[in-house]
Image 1: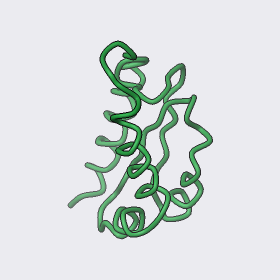
Image 2: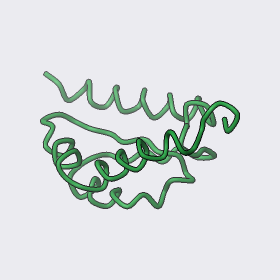
Image 3: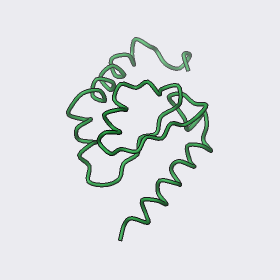
Image 4: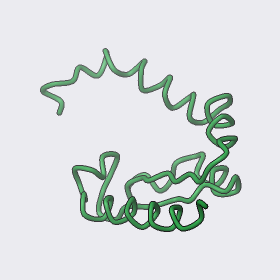
Length: 95
């Protein structure tokens, strides 16, 4: 990844994404969505500052084991299991 990404180029983008994730209005908008929500994150990101607020707002948290920021690469079977389980449970609740 370092060979393909120049840190000085992407740093401002990532900083703004973190700021939008940590603070309103993006987080508030996500919490206000009128349907079941789930946030998946890698085990290495279990210390994200906004996880408690999401859980308190009714968002299901799915911590993907043995993975970091990209669970779709680190542990795709676990990630797809979380998605499949969530969709099955949500599908049963929709009339």
